[in-house]
Image (cartoon, rainbow, N blue to C red):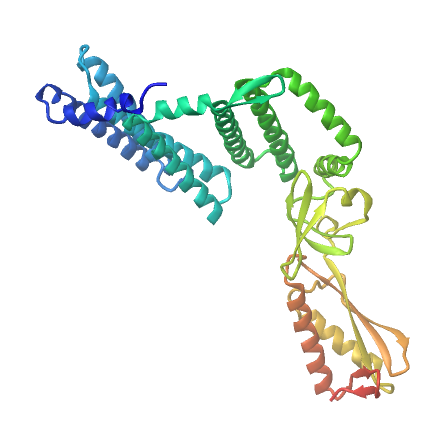
Length: 417
């Protein structure tokens, strides 16, 4: 292996060239390239104002245009002369472009969070560490060291450098595939000719195909042949036959739900004792948001094995009831008129079907009544509607001199004031 000091010539030549008049021709080349790159990025910024996805491309365009113009101008003006200052500028713009491209992809693939910001920071630091190793001449000896560290795997020997390269290639390919999949998702969601279920099916299929081909292309690049795929396929077959049955069932059920359109995004449904709005229809599970804000994550297999009530597609509103109890001797007809009148005045309650108060039982403590009503929009805050309704009923009955009953298990029935 060569000595580390043999690789420091790039940085040394750069500092020497700064003080030599024969290299002054490189300064206008760098200046002109930066002016052109700045102009191109400014034009792009004006054309993409308001589009956050395209606005983020400005920094990438600046770095790439600067790199290309530097290379072209150097080839034209150098006439065979060494250009260490331009080469340093090229390395700088390449590192800048790589860092900005990586941040752009990470930003538009993954949900923004503190962890994602940390990942972006780590990526940028790794790029600039690589740049520093390159200009100081330490990159080549570091690669030699990694190449010399080997360990046996099966009947062959691999180096630590191969492992690092495989991890980098696999990470880059999968990230690019996810970015491409996110781009496809945005395009599909803009399509007006497809409903939400068809869009969800198309997105899942296209994303799955993109990831599949990314893995297929990556395996040969990291030195894994097709034999591995056959072994992996056999292993997955055994796994599906035993421990992965539930997972496979959930994925298949997810596509069935989307295909038969029994459930759509935004529908209000009741299933397995849980009611809420369908927020997400994913390959493995479905997310519901309850009226109190609770999120329910249900395996898709649940939709195949449990009875489902779709309040939205039924079109009849959300059926609800409220139990009341009044003292014996109370005029039921008067109570019925008052309660139904209060209920009809609630703007969120449907006038048709009409609210109805039924006498359900002659209980031990009084007349047991059941109020039936329908909420017009299942997405409305149900608890708030119920609270307003019961408050209005209590106030109206109290003003009319009608006493309601509360049952105490120790003291028995007690009239409400």
